[in-house]
Length: 231
Ligand code: DX5
Ligand code: ZN
Image (cartoon, rainbow, N blue to C red; front, side, top):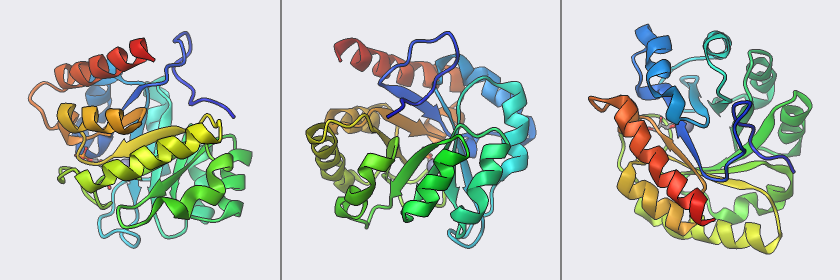
């Protein structure tokens, strides 16, 4: 099973930082990305369609523009009601991975056939059991640590045992599946998530809503680098 790709020339790391542009200033998106780029391993793109969750955010046209200005892998988090119909558009626009909320096998196959890595998402109320049948067919398990829809929500600490159980199951099966956490991640909650077994930290407001996004990204990256060195 393939690892998440990282920028060419970099060693593939196990522990990764995924800044989410949801809290960036979209009128200055290129500059915002440039500020944090050197600390990021992936760029997290939250696509919301106004149906699956109330907000409407961005789609493949923005992915296409991002693809031109950064070498970072673009992970497209599809909070949309029709991921099956839309995954290919994100792949064609230059997405590196597509994170879907739980969907059956055809979607995962389509994502991979479109040349993307496949990730499944667990919303907070969904038990780990719901994804166990698909673990062999995904590259990333994305554990939502807030309910999807908005940046800046409080980390749901009750998700930590779910992360730990996922780590046990993935290791028991000998799989190379990354565990990403998404929502309410900052230095403290990120550390707790890593302790529980996560390997990829997604963060929007803890980076882009801080006075100095580069410094915030650097501190998170340092935490990940420490874990990488210990692994
Ligand atoms: C929520 C999105 C998250 C969000 C995280 O639906 O999936 O990626 O951007 O925002 P923070 O890090 O502010 O909780
Ligand atoms: Zn997200």
